[in-house]
Amino acid sequence: MERVMTTNRINKRLKVSATDGWQDTGYRVGAQDAPKVILRAEGEWCTRTDDRKFGRRDANGRTPNSGATYLHKVSGDKEYPYHGGDALMGQLIGRFGESGEPFLVGNHKSFRVDGMPKDVSLWLCCNDPLDSAKRDNDGALDVTLELDDARDVFAPRPQHFDRPSGRWVDD
Image (cartoon, rainbow, N blue to C red; front, side, top):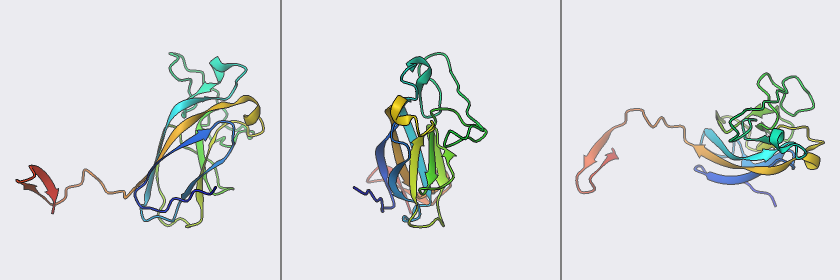
């Protein structure tokens, strides 16, 4: 089933599995008027079921709720889909389209998408070698994808106080 998102204000929740490699979110990057996308991820997944203490990871690639941090740096290791300078095993990563360049998402990422092609979708993945994901990964992250009209909510705007409602309203 193909999921296509086409509205301008969306707050969509989805699960991204550690075992399924690259997963299409159904969000077509240039198909909306909203120029900004915000991704938030919660939860944990495991990249090594044979050693859960070491393999448990949050979206930033860190060991959650342990008091200790076991970082497994993978920068430069081409077995990992994302191997940039800040790459860690188990991070949530993304790309635009089936063959786009991977980028770090982590537990929070916002980016502008104005001017991008209408037919390119956003894909998400656990940063772990794809050939071993089915064998030794488990779990999933809860990801919220929100489209934002990118207005600066702190920018001054004309308002007046509406006495009957008892609140400030935009002019």
